[in-house]
Amino acid sequence: MLNEYKIIRFSKVNIFLAFVKLVLLALVLQLCILYIPELVGLAKETSNSEQEIDFRIRVVANSNTAADQLEKEQLVEGLKPYFLQVANAQSEGDEQFELLKQQIEEEIKVNYPQLSTQITFGDNLFPPKRQNANFYPQNVYQSIVVKIGDGRGDNWWCNIFPSVCEPEKEKEEEKEEPVTFFIWEWVKGFFD
Figure 1 (cartoon, rainbow, N blue to C red):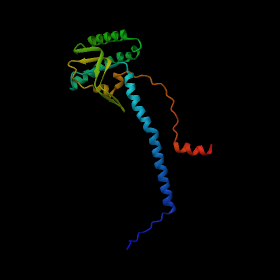
Figure 2: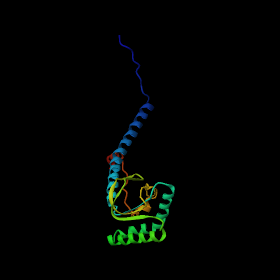
Figure 3: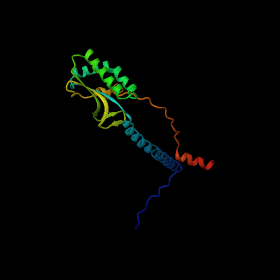
Figure 4: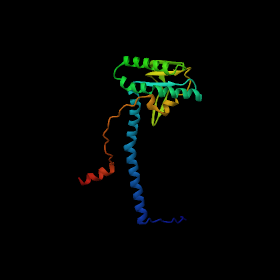
């Protein structure tokens, strides 16, 4: 003998709610289709923009002790005007960087004679770095690196205040395209 099954009849409210869920699901899928390629493109732009950075500055403390990190902070504050000159020097060539390196060396000799520093100009290895949503891989960049003492300290200063270590480039104003929804455009197509 067959079991009796209860037949469930849906009311109009339940049917309407199911239709609303279907429409919301379609909208979510549409948003995913629109924005996932944009996010992938943004990730590719980020990796490409890393290659556009022509020059960097890095100050490495002697060690991670509080005293050494404080010395590094003071040195960075004193060298900040020179760091800002880097953005202007990028268009003028290597001679300007050599002059900038000499100015930094002179500033350190005059104002920080107690610090044993080593300044290198040229291609230097930079460790991997995460800044906001961007990840910069470990790579060799043209840069000025100021090492204090042994240079075994973490570069936390540049992670907290990246504008001090890397010049900010002016962002061109980009026109944003209006967001369109496939379903809405499709429905509007029937009335055009």
